[in-house]
Image (tube, rainbow, N blue to C red; front, side, top):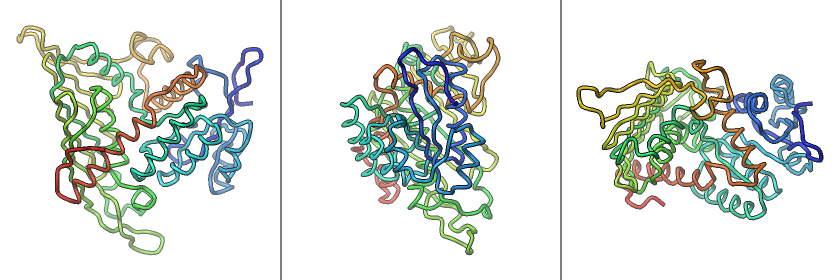
Length: 384
């Protein structure tokens, strides 16, 4: 039985997860490990859902789910399912999430919220309605749970950087640099919605807003598709999403920001770099050095100033006290464990988890504005 101890009279929460590929594997790892390191409400990993019967059955056995299924509608109708974790491609998010919320299930869904602004708005409305009945929902921007980035947000909120002036965020990968890399669902607009824009720029945009506590109001964007055809099972197929995206952003609080995202940045494997510049100091983070935060304190005399490396591995740092002795670093997969931990604690307490679908919708509005700006070669001055 995939569970941990319950208090007398308490029934464990039944979890169903939809999707078992890359994100399904990451989320499964989190569900498998979270109760071993954090005190969370009791739950059971009951069902893993996928379209291929043999494939999902094999994955369920490998990842530790009690059973597998191929019909998500039947699964969310079950009385023993209380949480639905959606790791399916973006084009399926809206239908599954809205149905699950209507069925009274708490929902965790991977980013971006949906493939279109209309779908994201419908999901957010469904989440707001469900919330009035105690049904919670959350979008999975897992990088909010990197301890170093969580520490960065604390330092900014404490005023250690003074007035924030501008932010740079770049998320660069190279897995599509080779023009012979095969066609996937992530390269088709009907299944992915967008390319680097929704896939990884969404993380950068969320970090800019989350770290500063401000909201994007103005966007100028550019999109490029460098490889327009890729080999598929029946020959060359058209790539209908972007390979790379750029945007300059204006935020409330008189903050300016820049975003760059690419899946053809040769030599960059998974680099999310965030730089925050304020009147009293600066911060720099790179996902490829996940346990480190660079901090410059400009209140010191100039002769003493310089970026200093904070190894974010102490029990006093966000999330770290659940893991290993001080100084022992953690990895990318731990962000999903922290995400599940926070989601379960919110569900157990009956409080609203963060980031909410409303937060996801705000990012979706920015993504839509980038696309509109790129298509029209204009500046969008009212992101909505």
